[in-house]
Amino acid sequence: MGRVAERAYGAGEAELVTQASRLLGFDRTTAAMQQRIAGILRRTLTQGKLSTESNGVVAPK
Picture 1: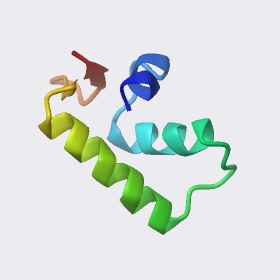
Picture 2: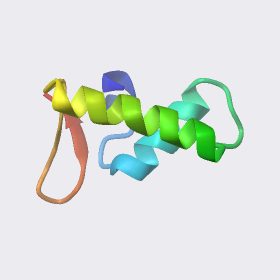
Picture 3: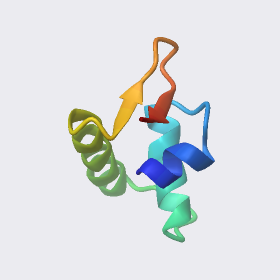
């Protein structure tokens, strides 16, 4: 997720989920994929590897 956040700097959580699925080669992001990737994003935020700035942008630490 850190690399996705670096590449998509200025993106919020929803956009990062979409960008991650594109990076994995998918043209569309299904609801199941959104849930899975969003869970990984939340875990990465909780671990402190990423942070959410005051404007909603997710950025690497």
